[in-house]
Amino acid sequence: MDNETKTNYSTIDFLKLIGSILVICIHTHPFNNLSETLDFWHINMLCRIAVPFFFISSGYFFYKKIHNYGHQTIILKKYLYRIIRLYLFWSMIYFPFYVGFSHINLNSIRMFIMGFFLNGTFYHLWFFPALISSVLLVYFLSIRYSLKTIIISFSIIYIIGLFGDSYYHLSEYFGIKSLIDFYRSFFVYTRNGFFFGVLYVSIGAYISTINPKTFNSKLFSTGIIFCSVFYISEVYCVKTFQLASDYNMYLFLFPLSSLIFIKALNSNIFKLYNTSRFRDYSTLIYVFHPLPIEMTKIICFKFSLSKPTSFEYFIISLTSSILFIYLYKIYSKIDFRSLYHK
Image (cartoon, rainbow, N blue to C red; front, side, top):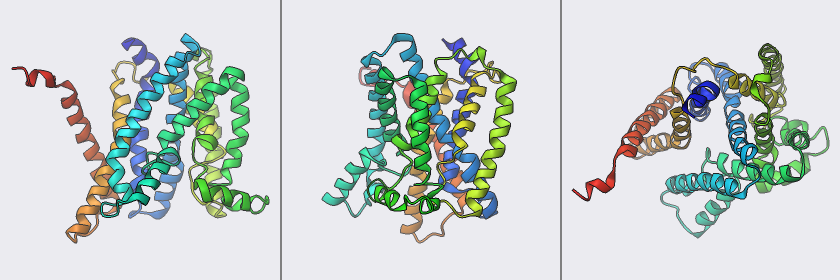
């Protein structure tokens, strides 16, 4: 299994680690003080590839098990149990930050519970309810429909979701702005499981059914180049014509991120390294990284200190996350039962 991981998934493991660092960038804007233009392109073009890659990867590895063992509900239950347990734990960690340390009341608790099921209990934790709902939808839909049918159907739904995100100001031109606004009054974002996550999870699931050796590496490299050109042009148009209410969803993002995943699946660049540990590292960085940011803000406020620059926030978050990983590794190696039975 270790050899298979090194050979087949080493580049994916590495890119997931890089993706988690790009998510830190999204939440800290490290180049904002240097150049707003550089910051925009870095955050709203390069970094936006990370989360779709996570969804595709999740769909791929989950459906590898489905492909091998069939639609057994025990596989789904085990997968969801692991995700929900992780989500619940970190929701409790971020609960005081969500409601405000001095504003914990019945209403804030009610909003927290609603957030738990809809948009996440903190600004980065939206990924978990989106992933859970996406996996559930793809799992049950794929019992009756082919993955190709699901991908085509949710490509249309994804395009509709664009009008609640990067193409928001085009919604009035198409006469659907009132409908989009009505939806957003309840759910705030179209960047969720239904409009966003299902497409990427189903793409990952479909890729898992294909032998990666059948992929033409040169063809996919060419596809990445063409999609990158169209993707950059799309981001440019969205920015220039001020179409967006947010920058999470783009039309060319899903073909580009899909091709990058397939290319990574066929890459052996890191085959000599044991990158399997990067999977845990990327998850730990993702869930932990806002904590030092928020704690720094509180400390600066309490002691009337000047706020760090955006790049300093990035360094604080990244270095704290690395330290957290180091401590986690030490903690996970300790046999605590032996400490009580000496």
